[in-house]
Length: 514
Image (cartoon, rainbow, N blue to C red; front, top):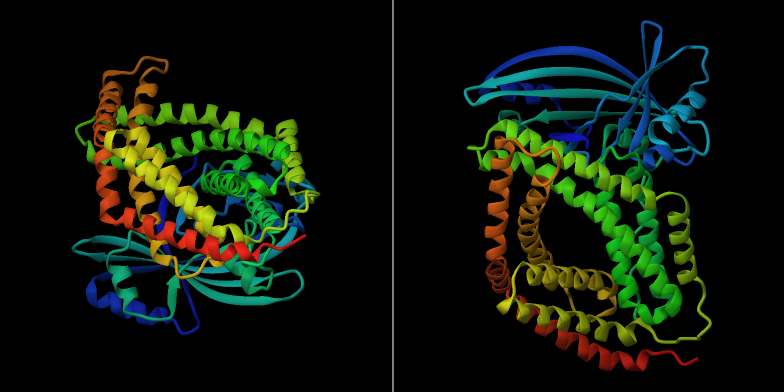
């Protein structure tokens, strides 16, 4: 598992002045620096951006006549700096660099590129580092003046700032215009500035028109989310940025919702086979993602339960890593060879033209489909009264499916649904925190059963988490009911049912006649 730390990165425009920032900082503390450095980087990729699609870039640096290539993680979230183990190799000058990288990628990740990478762009970075010292502490920040070029002669320049921590530097920066939090990595920003385009992981489905045929709309939604899932598969295989697991899992969840929502639009046999395979893969990725969440939460547990010895938490981390490695191996089996080929084949069968001649429009069924989802949520809310964590989790799943249904069909329904969507998102997040805590207790119990037997420090750490998880499980139903009341969820569901039923009656006349 790749460790991560959060650094605030800012993309600066032409109006930004580094000197103005330095003058502000000199009034609020002591400024040390700058320490200057120059960084020259050449990036390589295939013509179809295969490395970028896997969340990687091949970065070449030369020093004292030695060519060193690093396979650098390009995180999906640019505010996260992934602290991956060094993946570097020196290549002699006589070697074919592209073919050498291709062979190395296959050796390192068991992944075959379709062709040898070649030069994509070059960065020359003038880097200046300062330390700002105040009574509250020291903040280090870096200003990069980036010159980018590509083999066809296009050039671009831009400035970026990176701050770890924040404090005084963020405060001074907040009083100055000409910058914004960076939403892309330096590599991605350079690609865009040079006109090479931003790498996108699939595309979202187009908004559905009420007059669209349901069968066509359903295929468009399924095809789009399958495209998203496939786009993240290389990143999952490489395994350096855990966000690829999360994004692929979300794409598969949306795909499953679409298959359930639009089940009448697909061949029954093809649909059943596809749903089974998607469910199997989604569960395998879900296990990996759940363990990623547990690893990310360890820092929080260390702070919250400070009475537990650090050695105990260290061993807990090792046990989670071991369990995650096994879960990841099981998931990778489904992303290779025959299982992956059969899944892709099932998708093709579902997306094949339908000979049944169905002529219903989206508008004719959208209201009824959304109303059914809202009614399902209402029944799940009712079950909370006598239920426990399982019922709270079931409600969260129903809410998620209703959210996705609104995403698919909202444009085909009358009226603004933003308020309802916001309530669904808030409630899903609240219930998600409950589920994460309950899962923490269950995972801790399972980790305690792993060999070797836990030490006293580890047992104390795991026992603390088991107790916390059980306490949260006992309160899960009450917590869920309070969250439902807080967002007036039942009223929103009733409105959605009424809206959906009214639109269903109005839309019945929009069905096309074959």
